[in-house]
Image 1: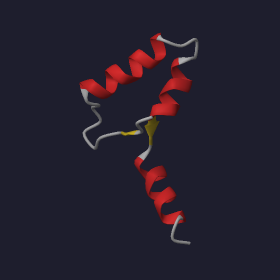
Image 2: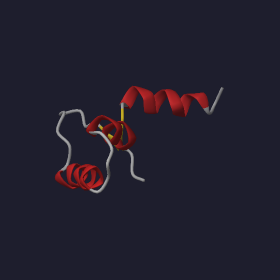
Image 3: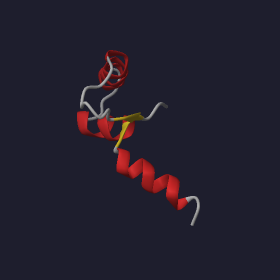
Image 4: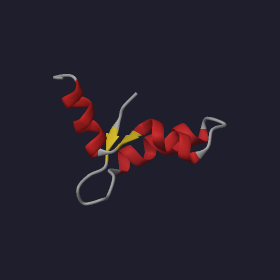
Length: 54
């Protein structure tokens, strides 16, 4: 599954939005749970990378 990092300009690519919408429509899950699964905060991504070196 692809993790999507929020762009600096705040706008997601159309392909990324379609991926998330398709996942939502094809499941019985909430929008929040799908959103959390597919998106990642940039700071969270940096923290995860740094934890590998500690």
